Length: 205
Image (cartoon, rainbow, N blue to C red):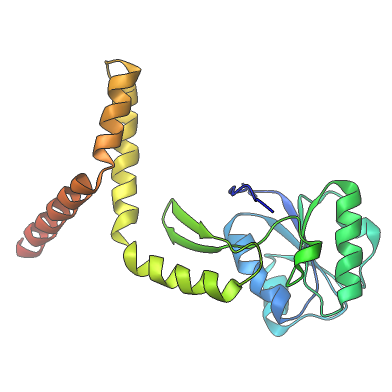
């Protein structure tokens, strides 16, 4: 089965997480970092989730899953230890046209969590269609070594250069060629050398 790799904007959108254990907890920070409004549905929750509730960063409904828990949700994460509950969550989400991920249950997922390398606005996602999260994690570690923190600064520079080019004169084709040129490896190496010289000057000042 082929998948379409996309990044979803969750700012201000409701994501419902069914389950209050360690697996559910592991999904929350990523959702919060994406700006989602998070609601946890579970009779009991971990200490870590309880702290988030106390801080007001997430909402908790202390109950078993009910169909109307999905009202208004944009995404659903089924993360209980009960396969039957996760399947029920998936089927209800599917009937409503809401995308659902049942953790560690490939057959009941509309989407999978990928391993992500993030350097500011640069995001590189790795997915194995749920077949081997361990492989995805190993590849992520390799890519983290390959794409260091300096890529965040370079991307900021590229973004600023792109806006200047778009605002300037010249044909669209010429601008396209220039944009590809400044994103090349030789230009990245020049950027690193210039950044190094700037740090040396600041250190000597």
